Length: 532
Image (cartoon, rainbow, N blue to C red; front, top):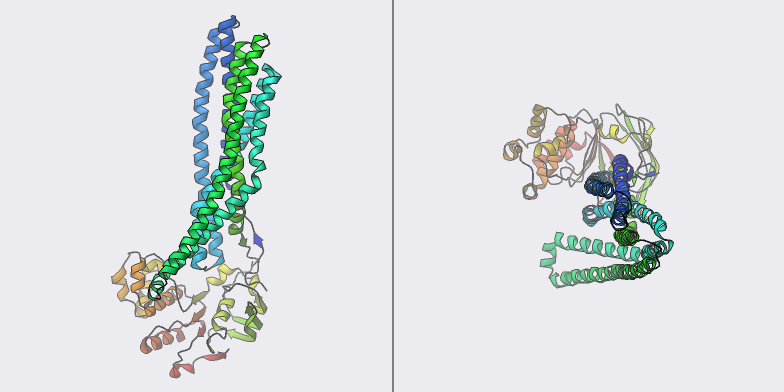
């Protein structure tokens, strides 16, 4: 069975801000339309002045009004764009964090790559893929409006301007596959560099004492050179796209002027018509060039979107049954292995409410893995069944189960929170209960030492292994669990403290599953033994 017992679920974060996106799109489209209307009115104004056609004052008023609207919509367009980016990045960061949290503990290299993606690639996705999609729609809207207006002036000018714009748009599509590949390779090179760099810095002392600094330097230089090589390829691809698009723009301007002068000479169009055509060509120039960039940037961002969707995938918890009181935990023919190595083989046992169990066996025999399987914290699949109150583990709502369990492993993790928050973890715990548990575990002196200050890295480093284990045990005890899953929680304690901790646990009105190597003979008789 799957340890997590669920189906992979993808979230579409883009839809969470659809109302804001709608405002952004509407404002952007209106801004695009007004950008085309303004040159048309200016052309009519010029014809009214030169050829005495129409009321000059009316056209002048309309032109001023149009430019005022253009300014207002330009500001609104930028406002909604920036606000959309802020909200979208916020939502994406939250979703990625929640998805990552559901996966449980990860290696430092994985955390470094994840952090790099959140900080660097999420803004890229929002700006170039999601925001870029709206900008592409705006650019297409301008191109269509310009084309319609130009066909009213003269079809030849429309064909020149519109045709050259289409060619400019096609350039990034031709380069699409190459651009996506280069962006993906560049991103992978950055990830590898970050992972190697963090690994070496985390083991800086080992690098030093093993005289490995020259090798470490060479490794970093190699990874850095790979980044440089991939970035050069990426930039060369971008320069090629922008160069081809720029060349087409120059050719377009020359043809507009030449054909426009010819049409005026033949008295086919008026001067105002050429002025409108020139202005519309300029209006179209920015969207055409931008569209080439936007399409190229969106193509480059596609691999990042795919990676985001993978990172945002969550294992859907199929468990619907809540657990109120844990009467028993029944393990039936449980087997588990990883990478072809059998860790647990055909274990069957029933643990009953309120009783104390000691799990013993040689190192690597699967005791810790056994606890992690019961706590649904171990990755992979297992054979057999784990039942709580007769209900299969994968059918249980894990939030309700964790509320009844106190889980402590050999190497507990302390957060950069206050001592109190590290222990109560957001639960509703009375100060008197919190202080009583610390004193019970011989940690009362920490109340004065740390008070409400946050534990930074230096403070945590100064805590002994035994202090960390007792803090983790206090974290479990404040929840008043019905079941304790404990893995070597006294391994860093002296004999006296270890004895006191065990006596406290034996006095708890709860089921205790305790993995232990340092057995205290006088207390052994109070446990039921399960040997692996």
